[in-house]
Image (cartoon, rainbow, N blue to C red; front, side, top):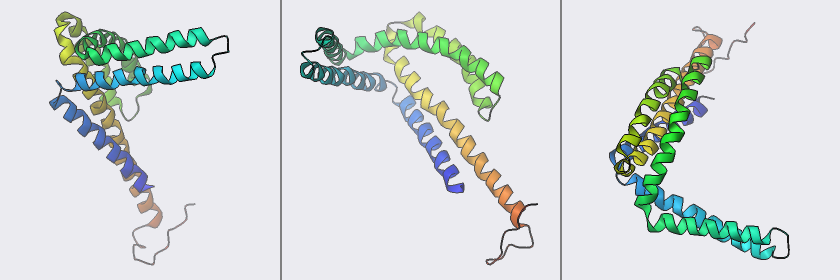
Length: 194
């Protein structure tokens, strides 16, 4: 059980490191994200087109071809103009994060779980930072997506670190109580709880 908590903490550390690297390389993150996001609809459009061709005698053939063509076109546009796509995505991301912040705030106050100390400031500061995005748009598209994409794993990694560390400490405390101080030798058997 202790190894499971170690893996959880290791996942959190990996997420935090990825977030920190993304913050250092904020200018590269939007273009990288746009190249990845551009490939997804392009590949999806090609697969949808192949599926539409296989089902060409069905009722939805024309609709499937139109949707596939739109997916392919969207992928090509994003790949050819990643900076403009990043600027457009910045506006949508700002709206998404602006509306997500109050939900995190209310959720952290209602649940008050182990991530309360991380979720509450994220819920308070998130909407305030997201309001600043439209003020500097479209030039903010160069760095905002990278910052958002980097802050998300950074904050998301803090929760598993706290859970992994706290879980490992809890398992240690329980196993110490069950074994007792008098039976700490190599051949000692655990005491069964009453």
